[in-house]
Picture 1 (cartoon, rainbow, N blue to C red):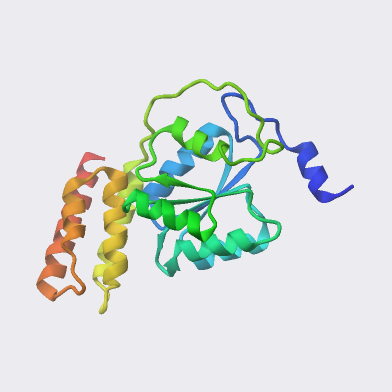
Picture 2: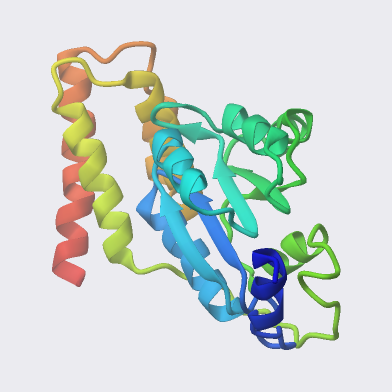
Amino acid sequence: MDDALIEIEYRPKPTAERPFLGLTVLVVEDSRYASEAVRLMCLRSGARIRRADCIGSAERHLHVYRPSIAIVDLGLPDGSGLDLIARMDAMRPRVPVVLGTSGADSAVAQAEVMQAGGDGFLEKPITSLAHFQNAIMAHLPADICARMPRPVDGGAITPDQIALREDLTHAIALLALEEPPVDYLRRFLFSLAISADDKALAGQAAHIGASLATPERRALSAFLSQRVQAMAVVM
């Protein structure tokens, strides 16, 4: 019997409460906090999750298996998520559902994702389970996920603060480098601020220029360190 048929035959059948049973979601996301939000959504939906924190890691995943769904952040440390989306779109067999995600201007980002060959867009922060499921189900083939009435879960999903602390610590480590990746650091911190609904952090990210002089770097590192220390006290 064909391997694909065997997989379909033995795949757990989805339920109204867990519509993605038997499916695998590849999350390509450099932020631990943002990927933790998606992980919780996937668990509540019945899906398995695999995470890649960069394009290189994602490509290694894709050489081993083909996920049912891919959710790709547009700002990755080793390149643009749009390039990865375009490569996924060209794969045969194609990943059934490829979604982009970003905390940047949603209208522009969504247009870029669609132009690259993606199926849809998830705007950060990703907090609503119902919105998450609907965004995926709108593009899943009927033979993979049967359509059925589902209970509406209006509650927000909140990731563990440990993941947020890990992201802040990562940013501090980048600032300590002899030549910090300034452009990437700006995008990373701004996206993290959107996901965590942290207006002060968003303001810090917005003020990062094309380069970081030593005083600005120290001030930003001190700000992030204060955030980490405050979280450690609370936790």
